[in-house]
Length: 323
Picture (spheres, rainbow, N blue to C red):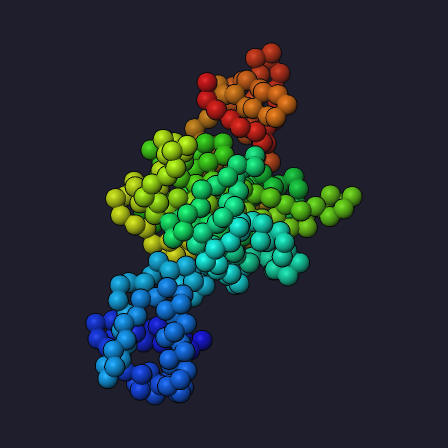
């Protein structure tokens, strides 16, 4: 597209102005097309200075803008991210995919700069302020089976951990439902699916990922148990780069049925990061709670709990806490 070709030229000449005439000649478009391209880039948030008789130049690095163009530059795979839909504001990226699942394709990604009704597990709200976090959902329509949905979620958790490590050097650890740094939540993942009628076949699955990337503060009700990469690093992270690393890791682990063939390795890494083996835990459900010791994980990603009465139970959901 003309506007992104203009952007690349401005980046190549970041320390000087480029006239509209030069842009027009290099791209073989009209001056009007150049003006419209500059206007469109500004509307997307790019900081561009324009001076009569001198031309245009970029101010600032502009690389943290969540646009399809910026994100795609960091994606290396073939299945995930062919189509990326970026929104300035949306109620929920997971909800958007649910409402438009018939129009969207396998591997499509929906990203928002702000969510007004960000959702977490157990109907909890995920705090999603403007221009701070990463709020994205990935749609899967291939090789997704009901008995491996937990494994899909686990592979997604590992992908986010690896992405954070590559971009920041931090090594996050896992709780049952969240990703933590310094003992505080930095990311939540919500995996949802749609089943086809009585067959029980999975029509599609959505992996929703919310990361506190550049948040500077949090509401009172969560500030003591939540942190951000910016607060831990002391500087902002490039969201587009982090998104790219996470998507690349998801492609490695999940696409082409790798999360089935690599099941053992995925589960081993998950248990290592989870640090729950032989620990006593309590798992709460709406109708009951279970107390016991974690003795392992099964092939489908369920925790094996040895209860106080000596019986074993496999757990796939619930609110888990250490005792």
